[in-house]
Length: 99
Image (tube, rainbow, N blue to C red; front, side):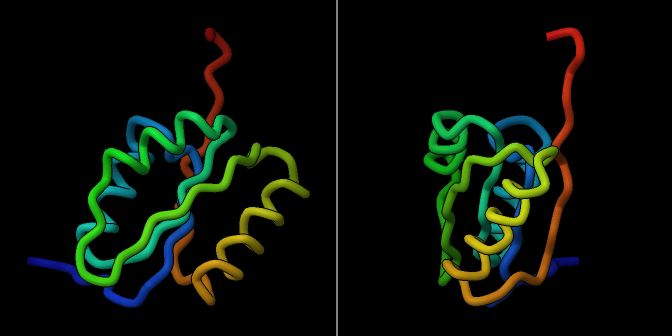
């Protein structure tokens, strides 16, 4: 079964690598425009560069700590401003206490 997300907008936290990056790639492949977010902009830029948008899908990045309410709100605002709305939110941000 193929699911299409054409015209939809997704915000994915923890998207600079791993599961978040994989979810972003799948959503873009399904046609969604995606805002990638994590704390480190350089990792976000690398993740965005590794994903090839198709059709009308677009990718943007916004560096923010999802644990900071003001930064999280700014990320949502930036997503809505850039893409005109927000349909899908993937809360994938986490911390590794052993790093």
